[in-house]
Length: 280
Image (tube, rainbow, N blue to C red; front, side, top):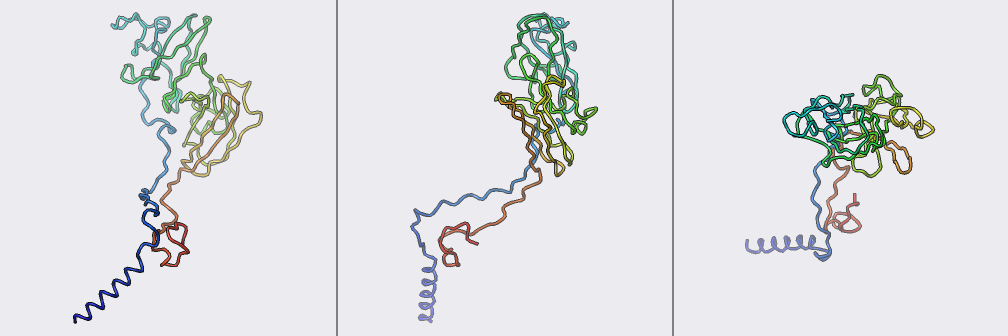
């Protein structure tokens, strides 16, 4: 019996030797933690907001010029988020707009939501210099929280035969700012992003100031949405006038296409070498 145990130990030792490290431990690559399966979903910012604000107010030191009065704050009618005289009008797909006649002057403003200072955009007050008495149009996009006006900013609209799919009265409507492009990070690239365009083939151009004339490029730009939920990104580079469109699938990515056992045992399993993730 004693000899049988000795023989068994010898055999076990020989088997262990077969799987001893064939390369120094210090040379072995560090194991990579397994990644959890990734599911691609459309970012919330590209969807029409699930909960639009009840109101959007143009607030600033221009409100008294637009008919607002002191509401107990001592500000003389300015910086009053509850003043309905400077409410913007909701036009749909998260975009609010309103035009106001302003006298010449230098002002600062921002947008306050729901008649209070609880939420306002942008973080810092926006300056605007009105060089003559004129009508100024202000915009707020709740999808991206972008604040624009037609004095400081380009007003660019993705105008095409998909607009009616997003609630515009008709397609090819430069004055339907549901498809307004915004430059959230200030890099000069204006974008419109949507995951709500139904499958189909479409064409568009970029129109400016809610009207035709000066639209770009010369020829319509085409794109195709293959599946519901595909993410369409329309971009315009204000420095170069380049216009582009990108369509990304929103179908879920369920996991890796292969999983390989890698290590210093692969040669013993028929691989040409060890630590080879490509060995089938």
